[in-house]
Image 1 (tube, rainbow, N blue to C red):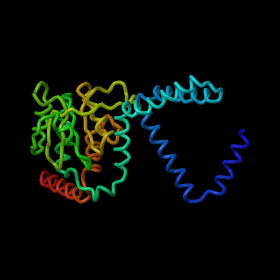
Image 2: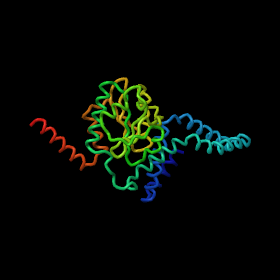
Image 3: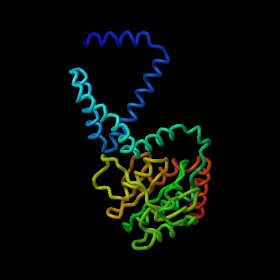
Image 4: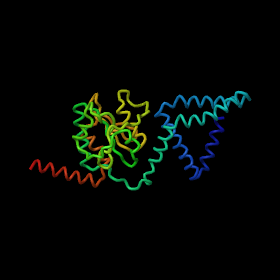
Length: 280
């Protein structure tokens, strides 16, 4: 049996053309994408149940168990519809992630924030970290965050470090939730975000961190979160969270993701002039 499979595979790859190679790569990528979605969710048990039903259906057809085969086929037909409903969030997340890889549909990338805004947010986060004040700030990129604005309070305000610290000050009306930033302005505050279903995240992360990761799993936003337990600063991007960032590493990361090269050079020159003015 193994020898026949090996012979078939060898003959297939020996005569394979470019289209066959493309076909294999596409199928391999789709399998990888599906497995990665399953890995980030709690769908492993459901997948095992599906495989068991399919195996039982296959065995019943071999043994010609008519009644059992009929019941399993009915279950499979109903289960196909149930799976679409059950995995609707995962399917949507997969399609959003898959579509987000084709950047040429979005045109040329614009700067999400300029150098001054990034420095302002970093300064505010460092001050909040020193006082162990929890905060969650989300930068909108190419994918819109309008669906989450309605869950909070629209501000459309100029970004200042003082305003950000006042928003997240404990027990104020807007402190619980996320601040959304669009095109260099605070779009809204106290916004509720979807939580990540990634079971492999560290167990010590709270709801604020899960929300920071969750929004980046659904779109290309960048999240900055300050822990109220430890005061550490983290950044979530693409469903991956980077923790315990220093001021320098936070500034460098946000610059690379949010500021264009031109604006970054302008900010560097501006900073050098400020330092020269202070020293001189």
